[in-house]
Amino acid sequence: MVYLTKNILKRNPGTSEDQAKDHALILLKKHQDNLFGKNSLSATLAYDSFEYFCLYYLQDFFVPKENNIVTDLSPVHYEIWQLLEQMLLQNTHNKQAFILPRGMGKTTIVNIAVTAWMHVFKRSVFTIILGARELDAAKFVATTKKALTNDYIKNSFGDFEDTLHKRTDNKLEFELTNDTKIMAFSANSSVRGTQYVTGEMIFRPTLVVADDYISEADILSSESKNKKYLRWQKEIEDVGSDAVYRNGKLIRPSTKFIVIGTPLSQGDFIDSISNDPTYKTFHRSVVNFDVDEYFENHKYWQKFKTILFDSSLEDSLFEAKSFYQDNKKEMDFPTIWEKYEIVELAIGYFNKPVAFKQEKMCDVKSVGDKWFKSNRVEPMQEIESHEFTKTMLTVDPAGVKNVSNKRSDYFAFTLGSIADNGFKYIRKATIDKITDFDKYIHTVISTLHGYPDITHVYVEKNTYNGLDVERMQNEINQDQSLRKRNITFINEMQRKNKDEKISTIVSDVNNGRVIFCEDRVSKEYLNQVMEFSGQNFSLHDDAADSLAECCNRLDEIEEKNKKLKTIDRRILGI
Image (cartoon, rainbow, N blue to C red; front, top):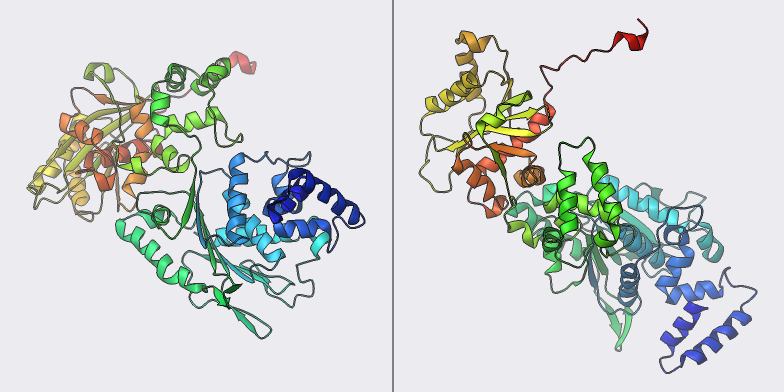
């Protein structure tokens, strides 16, 4: 009744609401024998109302029931549907971008729902869907097929799946019985010249949907970012068709382009699309306030943070969540959707603020800000009083030529340990412009002498391709005291994205889980860490990169001196 009334008002702008309700009652009575079957009142209403189509024909996806785990939709979801209806039904524009946070259900609410609606009513004869990987593309097809073959749609529109197997139906293609087709591509596949032939008709894509089209590989450099966007402009957008008019009347609308995603980096594909004036952009964050300002100035959340990172507690996560439950009224804040748990959002922010801003706030403008907000230092005597379970030295070498260049790399040496309290201690760290290869080798050897508990040495392979490690091992073999220690060398090429790697330690450094030696970590090293603002925004990243390598690899190596735990024999009855 509600959607009938809305639809009557939409079709007849001069009609009053009371008149629309009366008309709706007449239609209900007139079609009472066929409300939901073929050529029914429901089918007619769904043709004009995308929202109604989703809530009735795709109700198992969007309506909470006893037999599903669906969450009530948020007002933002209805905003999205209204915008899509304007674009696809009223033909208000041809290109739309949806920039939405992770966990918003954007694939289902946009991609699956739109594709199903467009093909049920043959508004799109040929739809192509693009995902980052082939696996993603195949999932899009499988889920859309599931939506199009549910019992509600079958009852009103018939079976769109060809049971005679005369039509194309595989993991990347689904040809419907109403002579329309859905086809999916991975980001690495070419869509140039893609067509759908049915009978004597040839169709170019009428709807193009890009759903989380980018991956980490697409943001590794400015070149990779530009390449992705330029390919979209030159190849993907070129597969569509322009509108056709006859005597001033629209016969066939232009191909519609819908981009759905979350930005990963400034200047990436999603960020570029959002700045493209030919696209209408719908941009929402998980909350509508400045998260840094909010959390930093909220006394309850700051107390929560202190508890969360208190290593003296047996279960700091449980204690922090208990504190939240005790002070829920003072700590709750509005979110874009009730599905988001406030305490989990806060934990995500405190643990990985950079990733939180990217994935939940859809904000990449702050990527150029300094990543490390604070650091914890302790005197050498206090640090060395701990019992260490793992110790390693990481070396980020630089070439010995052109060291006078302001932008040239430093040699970075980071000696770190994990203590029995679970904290990581940077016991010694330096950066240096070394002009002599022998001095570089001597620095490593002298550090090994100075710290007998070093069991592993990581040396980045990119600069010397293993020649430096070979020299170090030769020096060790000629040194009686070092030769006995069986030191493990790890010499690997560095292919990981530095920003990605460094982002993994930001929260631990800011929250004091990584502790620096006041006496043996050089000021230059620590300053370089604190000045880091992302690879593309920092003069130097050597210290931060070496620090991240050390912290991450300490988690990977095994403890060499694990204490054996004894069991009271009386427990065993001996």
